[in-house]
Image 1 (cartoon, rainbow, N blue to C red):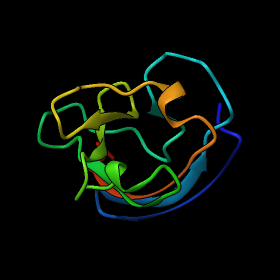
Image 2 (cartoon, rainbow, N blue to C red; image 1 turned 30 degrees about the horizontal axis):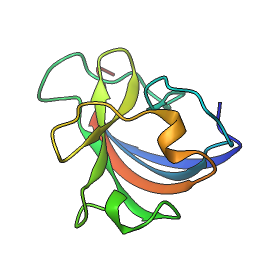
Image 3 (cartoon, helix red, strand yellow; image 1 turned 180 degrees about the vertical axis):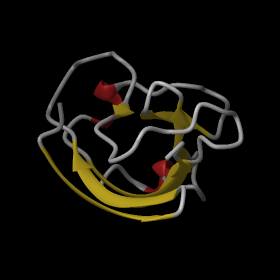
Length: 111
């Protein structure tokens, strides 16, 4: 559960574009970072899942794409999950404790 968040979306045909921000609470939770509550169900195919990238963060430049890189992949369980460009396929909530992320992304839906 995030401390604060806001999001918007635009749907054109089956393509959904999302943008927003989330502020993580101060936490020692070691579960994987996930963003759920998306406005439409993510398409259950490898090519339809899409993803999101970080446009701003208070976590420092290493979380931006030009740093070590942290981005969000769409998943068939209708969530975006965090993945790092360094090959680590998950990131934990405690690694972004009390940090804020602005994201922008796209995915396909079945309807």
